[in-house]
Image (cartoon, rainbow, N blue to C red; front, side):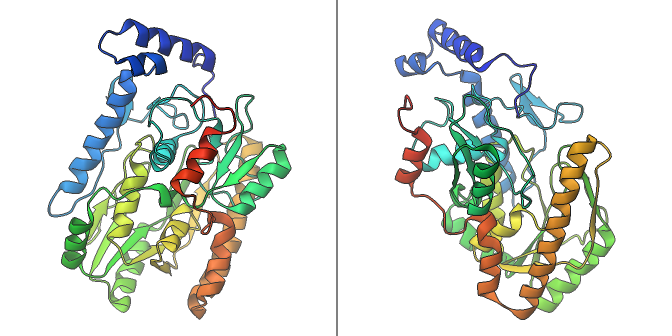
Length: 369
């Protein structure tokens, strides 16, 4: 969703080119591309945050939730939560959680350069009428995870929509294979915990002490030696966590390496426990982690939304509750094929593109790459 206070795409592209042409420090390629050096600085600054967090020993992978804006890091409170504050691209296409960076890297394209001609659906929607962003005149269409969502978008808006599989497939661990193997040996069987979390103006909540008790019980029964408690940046720190549990945070959602951090904690884990039918569920399923459902109800507060948006989110929440009930039954029965069939239409587990396939898709016919 574009911030109406920002200049138009054409205006920002023109400003970027003019700035690049005036800057003697930039190479000829930079001048031609009209790149903004501050965008590269933002990538490097965020990379420093995640590098520091995941290199701490003992392991304490908590990425700072500050966001990068106007050349520095700031407290995210009081700033518009939905628009990407990193402004890495001279484009309006959504790039929360670093989706644009992951795709360009996988496709061997410059991380900052030509705007993507696609709207990136940065999360999960399981109901037909739920919306991230409406089509824009400059877009070729949508990129999303699963075939069901792609079909809904094409049907609703009459524009192309491509399913490219779970976003986590395009992320890369922040630690090399040897370091991950060493940490896995040190941690032993590890359970990753991801609860229902707040986003934008939707406040989600669960009974924290009931969740802690449920996780402790599950870890003991299933033989997990370590627990990684992944906290979403928008939710507060919890008191009362066992001191031996590892608290993690992937940082603010404008962090371009957010998904790399998520991939890293998943690579360190053997199972995932959750009480929400959310994006993380399909990510863990694609990586073949053992899935567990926590029997602690989650609720949400939609009072900050407009009536139309609140109704849309209530329908989405009801559908997630229905899917959660199906998931619980499948996990109880041990039906692995049934579980795959439940997840695949939403996450596109078989839709992951090769680098060359993704490169051709991102470039588009006649695109000026």
